[in-house]
Length: 395
Length: 181
Image 1 (tube, rainbow over the protein chains, first blue to last red):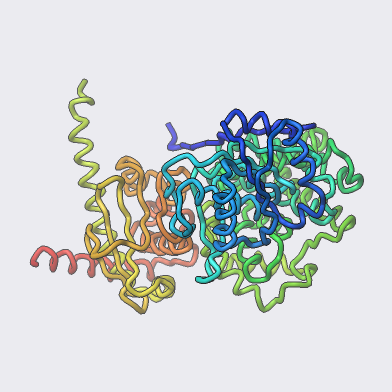
Image 2: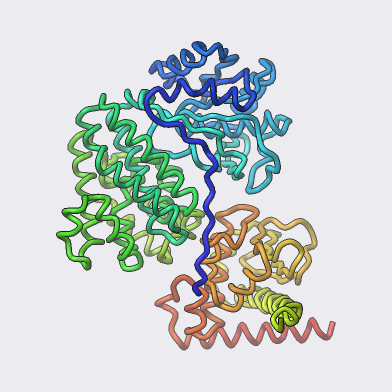
């Protein structure tokens, strides 16, 4: 018997497809929630994405009691405290986060404060601090990439101390994730591309890193198939509702996969690059993915070869000799990145971003080495290894 | 039937083994920080007075080391003088035994959810690198390959033997001093 062991957990009810938003009132009522608060950002509101959510609730006689629409891109402890104050003042009893990663993380953090009490969110930072279920919490993602709607973590900046506070608990998982194609229909092309590549990276790393398991594998491969099949279709026809839904589902599935099997060096480098050069996360993922797969190649040849089936379809898979499939998978990802560059100039190298200096590569390498996700990378990574990958990704 | 009767003895033996291994590792961590510059480069990043713990949940064997400055570590035994800053906790004695008997690599144990990190994850990654370096030095290559994700390609026999000898000498000296005290 081998030592193989794994854990898999995802209790989030996924409500996906046409008119999914209209299920919110029924689902809230089922949790005895009558006074929901919406947490979102100005961009979401300006794009008119709140309107169908509010209309869906009002048509069922459910009043949205409060709306906080000023969540910044990097949410902070002050913002969380302010939202909790509004929640308490308006006597809300549930939270609906509408937006991308920041709004969702903020919603999770606000839920901690309004459920546990107090004003100091930093007190609850860390793993396993929460011991009780929180208030009813729904998430409506407006990007298709982060997978935050099915992850049990949140990151909030502590402005005063200048640090990022991590929160990790299964109680942070929302009661429901509502995936409605209307919410991603107006995403601009470069964000559509970057967030979809974020989902692609989540799934690819989930399938090739150390904590992979049969259940996360199933979600990861399904997510890769959906992104490969639908991303370019959506780029060519942004109003393609079916394609948008496929990408949104892929993001959720990739989220379920990576939250149960973790990620590796692409994320270590991406987190460091985001912190030092302030590049968007999805862009970093797209940028580093092929270079890291090449670095890991001999440790992940078998699973990476399997991914060719989901990246290129059965014809290409069967026509490719088994010994060449892993390289062919990397080529397929490179081909997809070239197609995205052609359509929206999504950078493929650090130089193409125009926001990274070659002199910053050493700092990125050093920071990446201390990132938690590096533990799950299939190959050990030394400082020189990280520098080598970065030099390849430079130009 | 026999297995059932032997179970308490097996459990006791495992607990003793894990406790002994923690004692050796704790002293060896102190020793490697004194003899290896690369280890000190890693541990210098820890705040002075930083307490690191490895423990078996809930109240099992433990090892505690403190960063006393300039990358040097000091082994405190199994009890900390104050609340620890970073704790890596095995969920069960069996999981600790799997890792410390080199049946499961530390990295695999993390991936298999055998351990929890309580504290700054980036410092836990750093301490894991130190533990890997220690194991690469003090274990025979064949055993070390079962303990670490990748045996360092640039660690050659003369350096390994010299370092291992100095570490073991310091561990033995420390043990004798502890017994005398």
